[in-house]
Image (cartoon, rainbow, N blue to C red):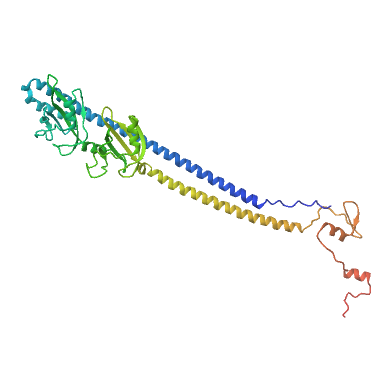
Length: 401
């Protein structure tokens, strides 16, 4: 009995397979790129947040440092003022005032000098650098203010080029009064700006970080590193828009990012109004410092992503080639099978006439049956044995012409 004809092998449409393969590789690579980008973005945000926190902590430490220096200096000035007023009521005690000032100065080694002046502005008592020099300070702004405004308390001067020290200083001064509350002079302490620069340089703000102290008018008092040759930048008011906006806002603490006008370096700043004093403290951390490790991570991540993309492209190309070869083999096999017809099962055949019975019960000549069920074609001839039987006189040789 003939077996049913097998269905042809199914071959996937080449375009559909290739498009699916390409789409899968593209989606996979886009996913990897997206995940890498998100990881780098979060890593950058973390580093920026850490930089802000570090700058804020450093500004708080400096706030305490600067505040403590000025607080100690003011206490010494206040003590000298009270002693000078007592001496003014009893001039016989004047000879002891210098010794008293020296004792106060020893308690505040951060200041260069502690002095007093008379009502005409002449330095008459003091301890420290230049205290014995005959110098008139009556033209100084802080002296004039103390003389002309009796209710003035502590006055903190702008940065000054000291006449006795020869360096940039800030003066803390208080009014000295006679028993009748008339002006008798001033007591003042002199603080060197170099002291702040040295303190700022001791902080770890990175190779390109900066620390600055400015007054309420945004004038520079001290900065590390020095933007130009030492001292020449004191008082300059070139500031970034971020700092100007903070100063106008009235806030006491804040952060901002800006390109520093001095050196054109992008920094993240923590800014703070010094408690009780007319100063701003700025601590800036340079992005090139705190993002240096992140940029190395970016380069490494890009290399890894490119390597992954290369591997996926190579793998997809190998799959494509293997699929093409497989489809070609399937096509060749299908072509061969299409040329072949097979017979299967048991075929009933007559033992005498050699006819074959088909599925419908009819007997067919063997050549007709095979011709119908296979691709074979038949030609007719006669074998030698049959020829002798059918043609007894035939010798089996073909006569020559």
